[in-house]
Length: 383
Ligand SMILES: Cc1ncc(COP(=O)(O)O)c(C=O)c1O
Image (cartoon, rainbow, N blue to C red):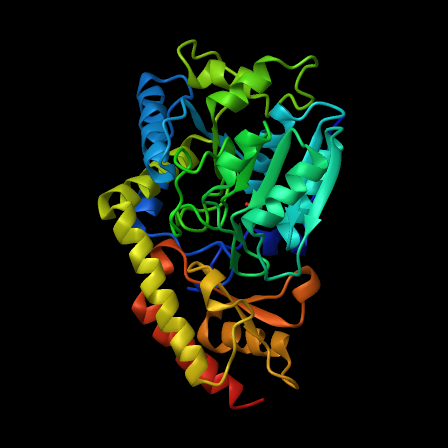
C-alpha cells in the first residue's frame, strides 16, 4: 500500500523564512534581548548531564543568589515561564487545608489565589484598590485575623505599576509563624530586592523582564524555613514536574535525570545574570530609577498622569492614565505600526484605563525614554 504526502498552498506559505520586525519592547515584558544573551542562546547544545552543563548550572545558581541577595542553597532555574516558578512555590509548600493569605491589589494577586486554591489551600485574601499597596499595620491585622501558613505578596504588580514595600514583613511573618512568599517577576534585576535581609522564604521570577533574556526559564528560590515545611509534608507534591525535592536531585550532588533541561535557555539566563553582575546591582537599580524618573517627568510635560503615587511607583513599569476621549488601543496600535514601538494596555480592572510602559533590563536606557516620549507626543496629536 502506498500513501501520498499532501502539500497544499498553506503548507507552502508556512515554509517561508521568518522575518520579525525590529520592535522596541517597552511594554510589560518581554523586553529586548542584548546581543551577548542572544549569542549565548545560539551556542552549541550539549547534553543535560554533560559536565560542562553541570558546571554551568552551578554558576547560574551562584549568579542567581547574587541577583536575589540570598544564600539559599535551593536557588535554581525552573524550566518554564514565571508562572511555572510561581506554581512551584505553591505546589511544594501548600498542603490541603493550609490557610494561604494573599495580598490582592492587582491581576497577579488573583493568579496566586487561584493557584493556591488548586493545591487545596484554604485561601483568604486581603484586598486593596488596584494601584495601592499594603501597610505593615494592614498586614499585621490580616495575619492576626487569618493566622495563615503562608502570606503571599506581589512585590512588583505589573498590572498596576505599584511596588509593595517589604521591609519588616519577614519579621511580621516570623512573629505569626508563617512563610513569606513573594512574586518578584517585575522586580528582579530592576528594583532593590534583598531576599535574605527581608526574610522572604519563597520567591520566583521570570527571565524576560529585568534580566532581559527571552521568556522560557524562571528563577526560583526557597529558604531553609520553607524547605523544612516541604520536608514535613504528609502528602506527595501534587505536581510531578515542579516537585522541588526531585528537581534538587538533579541540581544537587546526585545529578539524577529529572527532565531534559532547556539547555540553550539556561545559557541565555547565565549570560543575562552575568551582565547584571558585571554592572553591579546598585548600578542596575540606580539606572532603572533614573530612567523611570526621566520618563515620569516627560509624561508630566506631555500633560499625562501616572496611575500610582510617586512614592509607590515601580521603576520597571509605569501605568499612565489614558486621557478622557482618547482611544488607548488605537494609540498603542499606531506606536507599533509607525514606530515599531510596543507599549502595553491595561489588564483586568485597569483595561482601557491605562497604558503600561516598561523600562526593564537592557531597555532601561535614556535613548529609549526619549524615543518613547517623542513617539507618544506625535501620535497623541492625532487624537
Ligand atoms: C507580577 C507577575 N507575576 C507573574 C507573571 C507570570 O509570568 P509569565 O508570564 O512569565 O508566566 C507575570 C507576567 O507578566 C507578572 O508580571
